[in-house]
Length: 192
Image 1 (cartoon, one colour):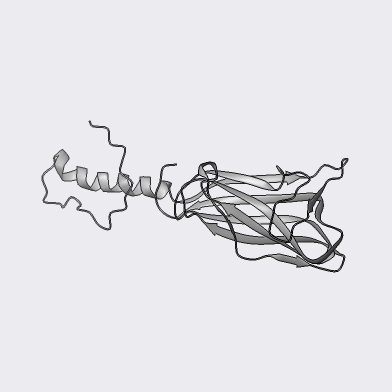
Image 2 (spheres, one colour; image 1 turned 90 degrees about the vertical axis):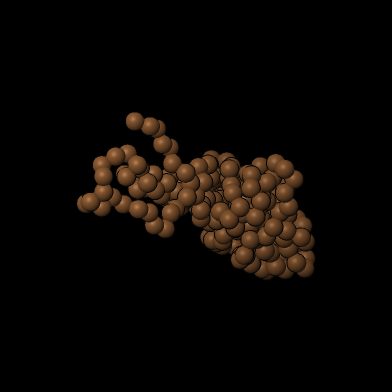
């Protein structure tokens, strides 16, 4: 017997043993190795992991204030509304959900999700598609969903960003409770 752990590939076709083939290891190894390769490949694609942040303290009220005219993280609790997704690979897809109670006592307030690939290696933050917009003192519970395709391997940081336009009166904030969730999907085989 020989140990074979497989290679990360998905062969389109492979030889199988015919009724007239001789019975030896060489006649069956090709097919078995191809199946082991496919098994390893399929094991490593699809859903990989979830990273999330949440705040749901029923005793202590918390507000995350944003005070910039460009998309920036909240300044009151900068470690909140942030998740990191380790071991991302180029081409991975991260689906992102952000839910919270939002207040825009400004002319207009906007929230988006920023993603930084290879955050520990000096990556650059990019804005993901979609946004939430409120204005004129509006308050609402909102959930928005977006996605990010990884461009640089490493650890990807996901965080909520906000900005305002016009005048900023009492503030631009997320308040009381919130959830930020990122789910990593691998589009090609990889063991990490």
